[in-house]
Image (tube, helix red, strand yellow):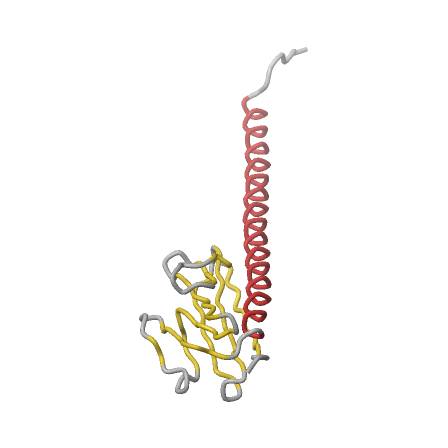
Length: 166
């Protein structure tokens, strides 16, 4: 009788082959799980941002008398009476206690709320690529269209809010 005290080369090759297949499968499952988690996290975060921005902007518009001024993406003031729809950088709303500005910084992709026109204001949102507005019912309201993007996840938020104090 022949006694084998070790592995044969063929056993070693089969063992390495099976181990490498299992390792590759586990790595792919791990990679897929991380990508899915990252996408889900980005999606949830931009939806939370969208909900917060919608509520805050609606509140400010409803407390306003109307649009005071609009600044387009080139930094030029636009005639409010002739403005129908377009991409903007800032909208200023007239309220009983002064002006309120809502603007985006396209470089940092952040949205700000200005309660004093002499200062930059408070950061209210991240990941905002662009802001468009549309005049509704001859100035009785505004439709906002915000594009929010984090990584590859893009969320387009569109809502209409009406002035209650005009």
